Image 1 (tube, one colour):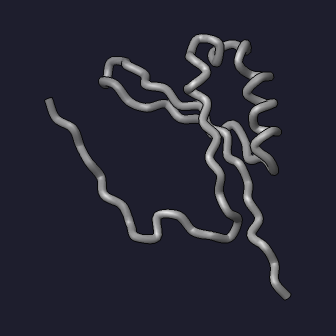
Image 2 (cartoon, helix red, strand yellow):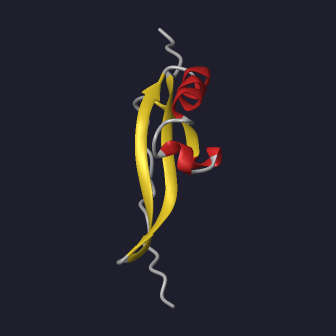
Length: 83
């Protein structure tokens, strides 16, 4: 039996926040959707809601991912910036 991979679409909202501790990325996973179109519908629904309306639309990001397939299989590196 040949089963094709199942894709999902993760909807994120990301922006930089500057506070007393410096500037860091604020990231919220809004949800996981069965199609890119459904994720876009949620963006359209949320874009005028409190908090979301204070940031540009490009803060919403849709990432396609395949179920049962790992990410970061080669590991990762942490980069720390200094001024």
